[in-house]
Length: 432
Image (cartoon, rainbow, N blue to C red; front, top):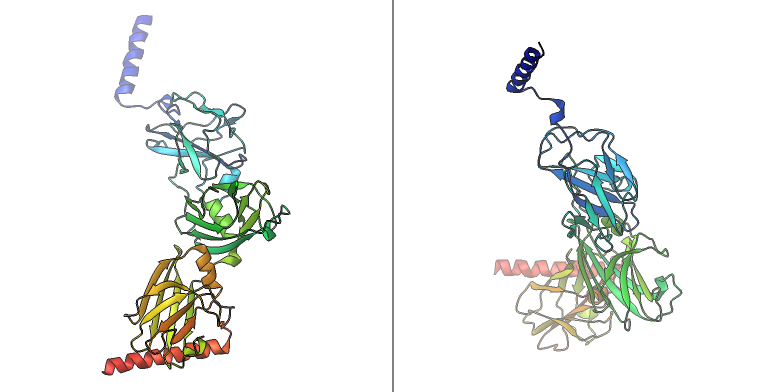
């Protein structure tokens, strides 16, 4: 009897397998592997990404994930058994609150794992834990650590396939550095000028020119407003001048930058807490366009040349400068940009322009100091002729609020006169 029942059971089981009945035990979670981990410096923003090549790995509910000091029990399964080639994301609430961050599949507590050394394990998985030691995990807010213990820009991705969405923020800021902005009581007389450029894809470049003697360190700090201190966000190289940085900012860093919550600090042996500071403030955003007029009235040479000109300066998002200058001076012998010099003051030649063309084209990469001089109205265009070799007409390149500003009647008179003459010259050429 037992023998017959045993044979019957075998036949029934074999038949069920033959018709393809799937038992619950065929689904699992064992093949998930830790592929990327990330933490900021204080451990409040952290994520853990896991991936698998196998389907049917959705049954995480009730399973444990551990660090050396914490245990997280999954509170639900993944939404689909189609897990092959997928990732899922465990992250802190502070990570989830960042603009543009992918929605975590599971929320873990802050400081779930150590920022110095730890071992992370999906308990019961057939894959290896991820262990790291002191100095291996980056905490710069940009880079992450992968399963080979290599570092690269963080790329969190949840089960739905969402990754961090670029915010599309951009801007160009020119800002001063001095001890007056410092919170350390510094009386250092040194100064500097910084040019910060954020592109819509998160690319960030920074150039700082300064006259600090032998700086010992240089950093970007944040998030902190004017007069407030904060920790280091990015370490700069103080051994070069200008100091140059090119990196990629995550969404949180972009938000802080555009919100005016980053500042640059230069340290010295005499002022170890900070010699000079410069806040990258929204109020220091660079004007993109400057329109100016050129006449003999502005000249310091006594010229009475009746010629007129009009110029348009454009500061591009990458910090480069372009200009077109149109005039009606016959046969100029030279055209230059001079400076630094304000209205009524002469200055040396900075750039030589092509006097054989009209309109006169110009493009160059300005240093932060040159951009500051430009925006302060300390550059001018001079058109020279055989009759007025020292300068027939001059045009101060005026930024709003300096000298002949947008609100100044003389400014607008010169602009309209310049435009009228240019239109007249062009029409005369067309009829010729």
